[in-house]
Structures are given as structure tokens and as C-alpha cells.
Length: 173
Length: 288
Image (cartoon, rainbow over all chains, first blue to last red; front, side, top):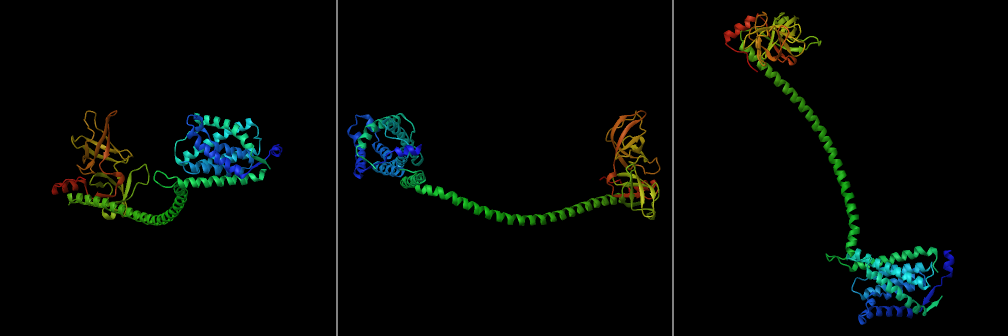
């Protein structure tokens, strides 16, 4: 059954420029939008790099690629932040691995599935981040708060818009 | 396409990447003591190993040292125990000799109180062979001038009388024997009676009328009326008094320690020789 499902799942690849460009744009927007549009509160909840990690994980369907991409994007995000490098890196590595592993077994193309999966992976990402923050930095971090729920909703809804946009740049293998 | 056999490889990669970042984080993060987390972790990982090794090493050394110490202590303990046993034996011997010396000194003093009395010192060499009788065997006999019915004394009081005489030994009937009877009187009132043995370590004072007041603790001395024991020798003291059918039933604690006799004196002459000697020397029976 699983093999049959795998057989139907298509693997996509992306031009390196698309990969790099999308990441750069996502990081730029992530750092710019809340700054320039402070009157839109939900922008502070955006995690565009996370959406990219999940998307590329779904498309590549390769855990190694997914986790490495998560690693790269997370480290990049860490590098631009004030906290120690590796916090987002670890969290996004886990998400990249999970997304790509899951996509190799189930169909992640339907929009409802994407919506739910992003919603779930957002929580996983936040929990991993909070766990690392607690264990390594010995700093208080909540596993479940209203902002986390709002962030999950915002990003999952945003993914519904972003994923089709990125779908335009993918190529079938 | 992902294959099942690739999963462990991916997992390994995931673990490696996570670990790498973990170390990266640990390298960056400093604790409150300004110590890098990586160093703290390293110390945390290495410390138990070092501590464990150290514990094993110390434990081994401790065991060896303890074993050696224990072995030495055991030998030392055995040696000390042997020395202690010897010391105890010596102490017992010394104590026995001291007691014997005290007893002999008392006998000597008693003897010196009656310098003219024919007192023969004897040593108890055997106790009574049967539980029904209260006799002892002394190391003096016919050779020493002993005869039947001679009084046997200690400085504490009357012991009994000679009932059998052999060449070099004699048998003494103790006052606690059922067959024994000694003429006695109460030291304070001179009320006379007969001391009878009970077969136990205690004696009984008989023939004391009810109208005579006898207090517990009253001293009992020989009356001299039996023609065997000189008058005035300590015999014992009243232990208990209760009314009997015809006479009072009075229990007497003998003055001499009849169960632990070692040295005794035998009056090798008529009873009056002791009384005469007492009068001439003016001495009193010593108190122990």
C-alpha cells in the first residue's frame, strides 16, 4: 500500500536560483515586513523560512535534502538573529526531516493537507525551539500559548497562498 | 524516491546534523559563570567517567589497604586476644591469690587473737559428694591431731564439726546439714536455742518460745551448752521470723560462707581452750 502510494508521489526539483532566491526573499520579508508594516500585527507571527522548509520538504520528498535545507535556512535565520546560532537550525532541521519523510509516504499536494500539515509542523517547530531554549539556554519558553496557536493559523493560511506560488517554479523529475 | 533501506541513513544524517548544531550551540552559549556550555558538557560527560574511574581506583586501593589493614588487625586482634586471655588468667590467679591471702590473713589474725588456742589451719580440698549432705573434706587429719567432734571455724563464724577423721584428711559436717545441731543463743538477749541445718545454705533456729522477741538481723552466737563449740563464736543472723506451732520458726543466715569455704581452722582441743585463750589474750574475734 505504502509502495503504491510512493509510486504515485512525484518528486520535484528546483533551480538553484529559485531555491536561493526564495530563501533570500523569505528572509528579507521576514525581517522587513514587521518593520515596515507594524500596523499589521499578524506579520510578527510570520515564519516564512519555516514555510519554505516545509514546502521544499514536501516537494523533494527526500529526508536528507529536507533536513539539510532546514539546517541551512535555520542557520541563516539564526545568523540574522541575536540568539545563538543553531536554535532555529535544529528546529528547522527537524521540521525539514519530518516534512520530507512524511511527504514520501502521503500525498501533500492537496491544499487541505498542506494547510493541516503546516499547522502541525508549526507547532513542532515551536516546541522544538522552546525545548532547546529551555534545555540549553535555561530560559523560560512556553510550549503552548495563544500566540503560538495564532502563529500556526497565520502561517498555515499563508502557506495556502505561498505554496501555489512556489509550485510555479518547480520542475518534475 | 526514498527507499526503506535509506531511512537509517537519513536518520543518521539527521542525528549528525542535530549533534553538530548542538555542539555549535554549546560552543556559543556561556553559562552564568562565563563558562562555555560545550566545556560544561564536556566536563559533565568526562567528570562522571573520571569520577567513576577515580572511585574504582580509590575503591580498589581502599579495599587493598583495608584488606591489608584487616589482615594486620586480625593478626593483631588474635595476638591481643591471646594476651587478654593470659592477662585474664593472671588476673584471676592474682585475685584468687589475693582472696586466699585475705583469707589467710584473717585466719592468721584470728589465730593471733587466740595465741594459746590449739587451732589447726586446714584447707578444704573437696566438697560434699552428695547433695543430700553438707560436708567438706579438709587436708588435715589424724596426723595433725584432729579428732571427731572438733569444732571447725572461720574468722567469720562457725562452720561445723569434724565427723570423720582419716590419717591426713578429715570430713567436716557443716552446720547447714540436716544432721547438724549447734547450741546457740541470741547475742542481744541470750535466749538459747539450737541451730539446725536445713540441707540448704540456710539454717533454722529451733526451740525459741513465742514469748521471746526475736528481731530480724539479730546476731546469733554459740552458747557453749553443746559442749562442742566454745561460747560466743559468731554463727549467723536472723533472716526471718514467723510464729510456728509450738515455737517460732526462725531462719538463720550462717555467718561463715559455707558454700565458698577454702581455709578453715579446727579447734584441736576442748572448747574451753579457746575461751581460756581468749581471756588470757584479751582478744576479740576479728571482724571481716
